[in-house]
Length: 216
Image 1: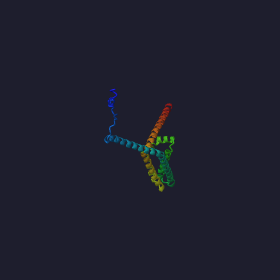
Image 2: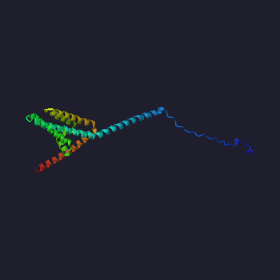
Image 3: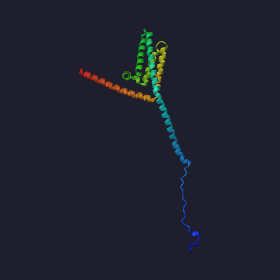
Image 4: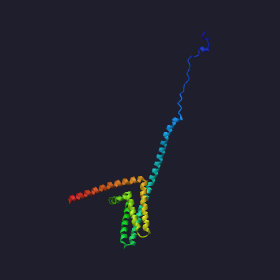
């Protein structure tokens, strides 16, 4: 009875409930975020520069076959023009021995360039064995200049035009080799393969001569 008549606050649970405490992450100040952004900025810039460079290289590689074809056609055209000019010089001045000798030399040089630009395998090996300087960019430019100087001595305007065209083609060849390193590396690789073929052919010839000298 006494318990029923007691105040209600005596029957309340004396255990106190502790409120849930939510941990809030510490606020990051602007000073702490600056190094991360500063480190990310150069990486983003370098990646964008690398992407731009790769796209430029791919564009250059796409243009390379067309440039190579244009260069070969220009070399072939200049060589054919030189042969025609030299032939006309022989026909027009058959009594001038000096001009005839130079014209024959120019014709041989023009035919040599034509044979090289055909890119036939057996002709490349023969030319590499006997005229290896044509596979060197600087020596090839000097050879074009020499043929141009010979054509410049011919009578008439046609010889002067051929001489200028040979000089322009030589400069264009050098420009292509400097601007397109991929083509230069490809030429070097082809030259190395040609050297291996030449060495193999020389060894074969030496063996033949050794066997012939032993049997004779």
